[in-house]
Image (tube, rainbow, N blue to C red; front, side):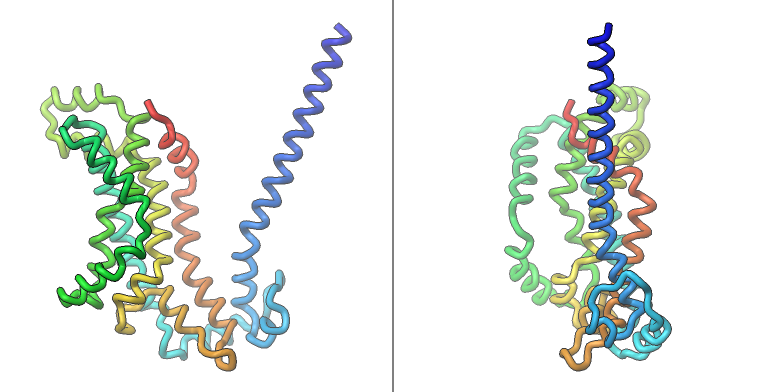
Amino acid sequence: MATNEVAMKSKTKDSVIFKTVIYIVCTILAILSIAPFWVMLMNATRSTENIMAHAVSLIPGKNLGKNIKKLSTLKTFNAAVGMKNSAIISVSVTCLSVYFSCLTAYAIHAYDWKLKKAFFGLVIGIMTLPGTVTMIGFYRICYQLHLVNNRLMLILPAIAAPMTVFFMKQYLEGALSMEIVESARIDGAGEFRTFNTIVLPIMKPAMATQAIFSFVGSWNNYFLPMILLNKPSSYTMPIMVSLLNGDIYKTEFGCVYLGLSMTALPLIIIYLLLSKYIVSGVALGSVKG
């Protein structure tokens, strides 16, 4: 009995030590993750002189009002236009990529057809290609079709999202029972009605997870919009923030950090709204039946 009590106390002590180490590591990681955002927000309230003298500050400054006034007078920065363009593109990209990726993944999972494995292999193969490889050809097509400066060329290609298709396919294998689909078919439901009313609700965690990734990726996209959009009225927020960087003698770093903070704000809101689905979506998406 004494030996068992000693063993139980030893296990309890080890468990407490292990949990303490985990909490400390998680706290450090959380601080490291939050620190860049905090520094960005603090610098948005400081003057350029203070930022150049001390790049990092954990205490807010007193120049927020002046930075807002300076930012509003700059001709190259229009927050309303940038937010509108970024929101239109990002929301459209997110909706199209998530819905059509779910539809494609469902077709691969639920139907048996000859080229099923070859098509899924093609999807995986496309995932290995960097986007910059096709950039020159894509721009030439847009130029020849007179579609430069058209936001549709930033939205429509999002329908083909191989990574999202792969994720949804893996999720369906662990979450969707084909008996439910067969029951709906027996009851007379059409394929699209079955997909929209039965399959999509089951895929909500995966959809929310991919919606976050898709929205963040589209909102932060700088390279492609910079190539295709050359009218100020079409600029997205990342392009407008990049234009705040003049030469070393003219750059207002307080305004730059304020612009970055405005750009990051919608991403933080979207993440807070959908973050509860991330863990469940990633966990279930990795389970194969």
